[in-house]
Image (tube, rainbow, N blue to C red; front, side):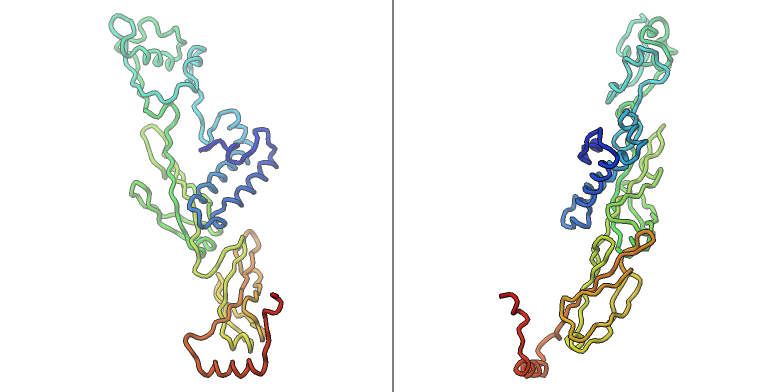
Length: 327
């Protein structure tokens, strides 16, 4: 992952308020709901969230600035334990990405093909650089094996994407996720999850001998709803009504996340008129957003001779021009 300061676009001396402001601006800009046609929006949004997890937390920010953790919040390798000044000089963060196996010295006491490894063995046993001399590297000397990923712990975390319905995001659900290894897990989606939010499952990542299992990171996205449109904490829906309901008025059923409710449509309601149902939007904290219902007048399918005759008669007796204000 990139440097969190670079991700949020702030200086290292930025105040907590400046970091918070930058995060809010970028989160709004890259939120998947605002970039439905951009498949990369979710990953950018997740990167902004991850950067804020480091810089928005005072303790983690100080740890990152001191080099104790990396951009993903994982501990950095701090050098060899027990080494003297020579060990520190030779074995700090500069020992990275080496791939070797430790071995003993030859019978002559000189360093053969495994001489460099003997130096490391002596360092791990607590000796300084000069302690590699003498008989420490004989046949009984302790040897060490290092993996090809360097001295730091290997990255065992897994990342997968999961799509949930709007109802599942609001009410919570249990979903089954398939890992790259083919393993399947049941995952509890908490109520109120938002698009781009990440769920961490401890110890469900990859494993390697001698290392703690990694975590599983699930990035959640919310599928497009067949008729609701999400607008922040509010919802919007188009409500089809008949011509006679628009003219005569009446009660019509409106879908909500909690079940259908009745809406009183006044007489002579025009198409495009919007009604607000308070508290019928998305829940957040102790409050909920609103549901905005926009009327769409629908004519019957096909030709209706009786309706056409009625409209012709009504047009001749009651002419009007709704476009008069358009010039």
